[in-house]
Length: 427
Image (cartoon, rainbow, N blue to C red; front, side, top):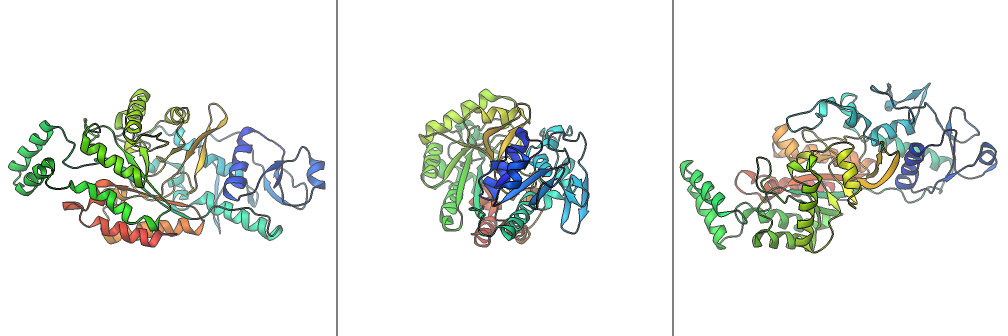
């Protein structure tokens, strides 16, 4: 694809490379001037105020280089919302850059009880963009236009993928816990009239019975034919109000992590306090690497707590390849308007980073705990979301938690839901 741009900047190059090279599979060459562009043959695109030739043209609004301090203009049209409208057209690249740069997320000042930007404060939610993979839909239409104009010129486009991710918040329910905590929990079992839980706790700790939360990994392994990737994010802290993992130094915990590493990809689930403590993040990742004997390249913040740009600058400089934090804790949807991975653009440094952001589309706890859906409702919500992703050949990344996949006691209904979702969402 030969591209002529009147106003070529790092931001423009970032978004055009992403659209054509990562999403449409077309290499990009930049025309040195208008005359070269006009005289060339083959696929061409102009990006500027005026159409230079009878080629595909994206109008320039100036929005890429001069992002608005408030919400960008949105026109509601027959084919959905149009960002940065220019007459009857829209500045597609400005709209995509605005969403992928997380500009709105960075500028929001509202915070919830965990220091996160509430979903209702986000531009994508307020304008309905989070209900659809807006970026992917727009790029697919652009690809269709190019294919009609230059048949056979498109490269290898993105393919739909079903990707399972599990936040291992507990790892084990009873095993791997300090003795004093086990005694304290046993006292609570006695006073709450739960003798079965008391008996189970000590049978597991004695080695007579397998820990019930170990079943979560077995369930993921059993469904491997239905997904393209499985990533387990392990929490390495168990002390504190919001961190409840089994002791990562306990032999039972390490044995389970090492077993998981033989069958799945492993990521770090940085603990609650790492949002503002990079040294703590390094310690936890180092410990996980020591347990599995190899480098850890993937991360998802616990409670989805991050700071923009601080957390992403740290992760980018830490040789991590992927971050999987981008998504909602209280609803399904597309927080950045896309279901395709994209490199984070550092607005402070005006450069594309090596850190790839993999947005997830739905989380079990958001549907169960926040939206109060029953098992059938959770399945329908996840199936509908996977269908929306499949339609644009994106990545359907779902988030599950070990407690639900264990099927233990109050979580008995959820393994069957997981299996139904995997069957529906398989490629």
